[in-house]
Amino acid sequence: MHFVQMTTFRALLTDSARVGFIMGAGDVISQTWVEKRDLRNIDVNRMLRFASVGIIFVGPVLKTWYGTLDKLVPKTDPPFKRGLKKMALDQLVFTPGFVASVLGVIGLANGQTRAQVKETLREDYFMILSRNYMLWPAAQIINFSVVPINYQVLFAQFVAVIWNTYLSMKLNEEKK
Image 1 (cartoon, one colour):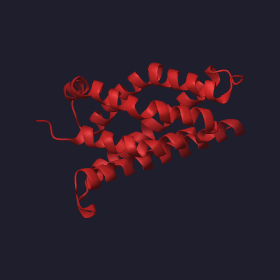
Image 2: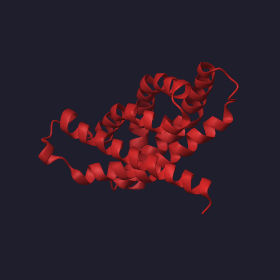
Image 3: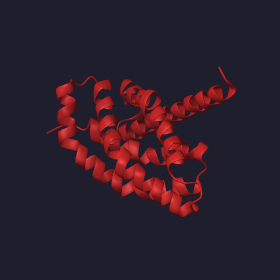
């Protein structure tokens, strides 16, 4: 394998592992702080499924998307203007489909049928997307304006501890 390809592959693996770890941490926080479970009574399989979605799906998709954004937005723009453009593309073009995809992948990982995933999307998608817009635009302006490209997935995942805690809570709450 060519050195550049190997370095890129290694970066993808590293970012995916970080995303998985942080998604797993978000689930543990949801289970212990939000659901008030004792640490000894957390659902380890649920946490591992959530983390696996980060490793297998979210990490690679975000790494690829951030690289694409970096190529789409001119590097000649001042940092803040470049950050705004990237945030707009991220939140208006990428995020709606990505949120739906994540909900679907998590649902399937949790053993839901396609019909149950569709029901989750119907019931929760717009609320989750609206909550996304309360957190991510500001975080992404900072991320895309200040953070070097090779640390953008990592920065986003630190913010995502909050997001993943919410997402885990929302996707695992009992339906009434």
